[in-house]
Image (cartoon, rainbow, N blue to C red; front, side, top):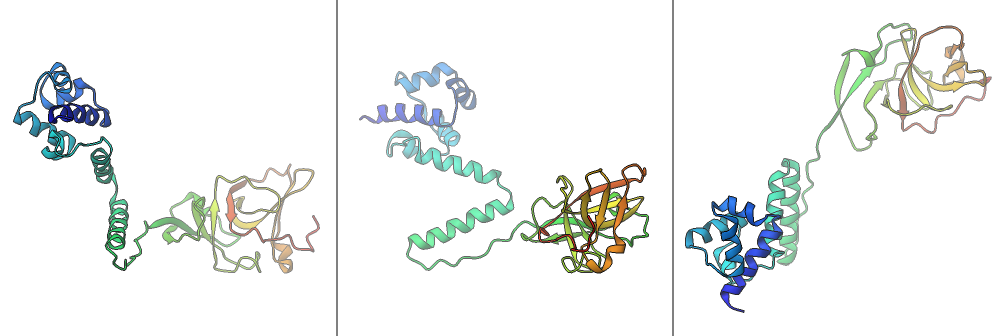
Length: 258
């Protein structure tokens, strides 16, 4: 295959691999679509200035472009695409790619790769202090929170945390423990949730009887007097902030009459 034929084939493959039309390539080079078509058909040969411009547009060397090494449309084009994608990564993504390249280079060159843990993106969520049962401030509706870094052990669905006060959910949830809440979850009987009743905030087990009356149940069997009963016709204001995640083991106390 002649050098001229190789160039014509390479130019067409490179243009298509970039998703460019003859018109768009011509616009990038400052020539007409007819000129590009003539190059691809071998009717005309580009000038040195045009070859340099093509090299810049396709991010390949002149040697590859004029046929010293036939670009298959995959190797050089693939490298170009990788470079373009790399430029669009954030700092964490670039660090990940750099680390993989380093480890693989050391493997190919028969060196013992040293794997360095990558810094993970920091995840911060608001954590509220739960007021006492007599409190009137609803923490999820104000700015009384502390942005807290959480690890991978905290479910991705958790949107905020609440620091529990009291022993009504023991032995499952300790006094001072932070629980994490998914506000989009649908609560079912037996789930643990965060609730506000007439302005006071509670962490309790959700229970609705067959008549539609609500009881917010304490898991601690010794603190059943702390249960909150809301008759469906009482008109009391009840707000559900969401489901507490990671506490599926919580059970109704055996002495709960429901």
